[in-house]
Length: 183
Image (cartoon, rainbow, N blue to C red; front, side):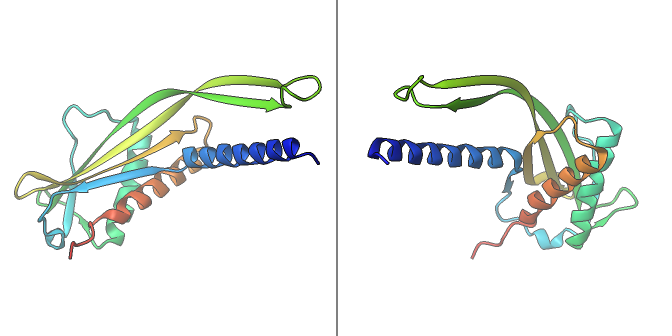
């Protein structure tokens, strides 16, 4: 095998690996969080859902799926949902959906090979959903923790798959609550 063909094969292999890695990253949830320095998170034992004024909310079904996923994660961390108006934390969320153009390309051959290179490109619009989750210290009326999870939305997903995606996103996001203590 000539060195030119060998180099081309290696380049194609690396390019394919990079493209597959990028596709895998696009399908996973991206999460981020920030916390108020100096907050004693051990004092928070109860929480209450609140609506964030001016926030975009999803339909009622998705709203219930999100709240259920967050409730489950907070219960696993030892927090209880308050029955009345008194709670240590107020929990609220908002959602945003943006659209991006995704290009899918496929190429074969090399311009230097017999017949030249052949390739096609298609595009599609994909929806990217972001969920922002906020925790407020009820006593001080102060934001103490904020997290966000972002993922490509599969419009054809079944209700079970949608709930599973929300559960995974909230599990991944709330791994950072309470934030690790600085030493």
